Every structure is written in structure tokens, then in C-alpha cells.
Length: 115
Image (spheres, rainbow, N blue to C red):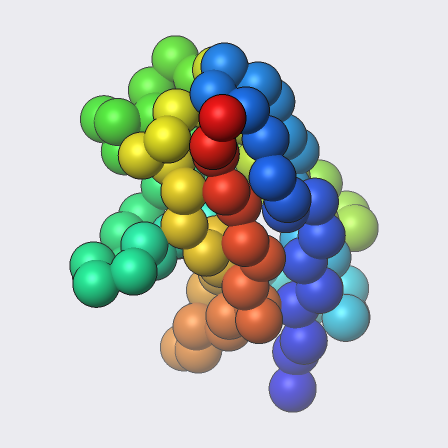
């Protein structure tokens, strides 16, 4: 079993920055993909950014140019640097890792962008 521990959420004003971090409880396995999803109230969970073990990263169109995902395959950690935050980025953010054949999820960390 793998547990994911997230940190870094909080309240920020529009235009501000936050950095989310996620660490897996174990590093004795190979992760196929790491990423971040988010879910706003009344909406479906959506992909924010993900990165495979071949270093290819993908981003939701709404965050391109503002968010950057980074991973450390040796430590099994994944971070999300979020710049120029907008009110519409407000959501609960979830760390996700895929270790074939299982998806693992963090408990979620709240990001609120408000003036």
C-alpha cells in the first residue's frame, strides 16, 4: 500500500503563487506517472498536470504557462508550482500517482484564490 502526503495549499490573492508538494510513503517501486488533479465545488475532478517516467509533461489548457510540474523519481515526489493564480483556480488539489495497475490518491489540499 502507498500513501501520498500533500502540503502547500492555502489562501492567496489573485496573481499570487503557491507551491504544492506530494511525497509517497514508499520509494521501493517504479512510478509510471505522477500528477495533480483538482476538483472545484459542483464540478468534476480534472487533470491539472501530469508527468510520465519518460519526462513528458502535459497540462490543462487553463494552466499552461502558469503552472509547472516537477518530479523526483528517486524520492517519488511531485511538486506543482502555481504562479499568477486566478480565482477560478480555487479547488481542492489532489496528488496522483500511477503504479501499474493501481492509481493512488492523496487526501487533497485546499487552494483558495480570493481578494
